[in-house]
Picture 1 (cartoon, rainbow, N blue to C red):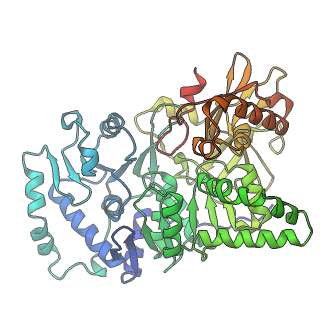
Picture 2 (tube, helix red, strand yellow; picture 1 turned 180 degrees about the horizontal axis):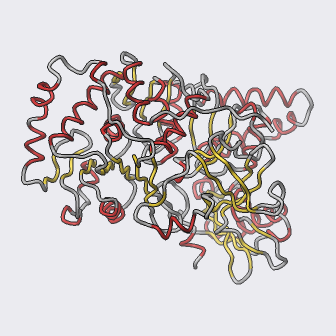
Picture 3 (tube, helix red, strand yellow; picture 1 turned 90 degrees about the vertical axis):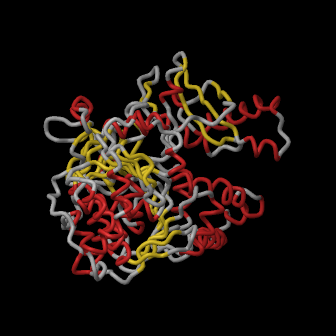
Length: 559
């Protein structure tokens, strides 16, 4: 077994106290939309202004402050100001509907709410039960004051109060943040559950520092490195590795602040030239399906790839094209958030594209396993972190899938005000039951198969993982996305067709059934006999999704 590298876990809040002083004059944040850049010193000054406001309105250590709006430097500022003050941040995905936002704010006991004006238009102020005030995320203007005007007065006198405390401005020696134990909760992150219910994951300083210190010690980001942040910062994955880790080491983070369509993303990558790319599988899968697959299935290219030595020439050209797409100066692309399609993964490995796949969950803030791309094993989700343990609940963990269980530094404290849910995922030995099925090699490398809740049992007793069938189905022509469900003891594929592709080839809706029948025949050649579908049902609309863009499977499996 490979010897594990020790990761020193520092105090979460003190990490940033040190970083802001150490990197005072370096660029910290750039707003991609406006081009405005602030240094670490600027960020420290703005944090001091927010702290001054918190003190003037009676925010205490441990008070909960919610944050809801699109990614922006202002979003980063409020997050960092809250945790360094010693309060608890409650990031809320701005794609949640108003009812869910209100429930999360009330359930978590939020006192102060920072929210974008656009979202505030859809919130009923009277329904916010414990909130003392609401401020606009964009400019801190008071949107709702339940403190008899105290919030408005504090806002108006903020500059005067700040200048009195810092008559010479904020200097490095003024940066002194809250002294709080790593055992205390610093964030409550509400999952956007595909099972239909949101739970408040309590993440401690240790949980977040475990992720940040691992990223620092493995040099995912480094001083003066460049990062392009385009994943939702309210989600644990983007938060940990597009914001918290870069700001801990002196990286320069550019906040995209837009929906990362391929066109926008490619342009931004070429301008920022990030040193590390953090992405979800969907991005690589779209590039593969729309740009690479049509290229390698052309007659001449397919013939060339079958000839020894010529295939490596083609692969080299495709690899260079892909590397250029991501800015050309990155060490690796880390894929996480969901399993990567096996066909896409195999091809990327074949062309020696520098990518790796990690595994995590919000409950671990989020990282559980990761391996640098040069050591990455195809089909795996990386090696269990040095600060974590993993095991498989199976008689033969290396060969027979079982539920993945983890414990260690990154594992959450529990679900906020939900003992029943907490008790259901932790066993008496402190293992967190992830709900994911997989196998594990002797060195701690994890291989995911699917969710335990989605696993189906065939008539002959075989375990069927719908996600594996869906991965093959999604690579078929004219398929945008799919779900495999059980209907009357038979497997059925629900497919949202690629209507744009059908239109381009002048395939009418009346021909859709025969098109799907052809896809069904091709799919059933690729899967095991017990995995074959009985039919494919076209869906008229996209599947309903969570804000993380995961399909709400429970809405379709129950029908």
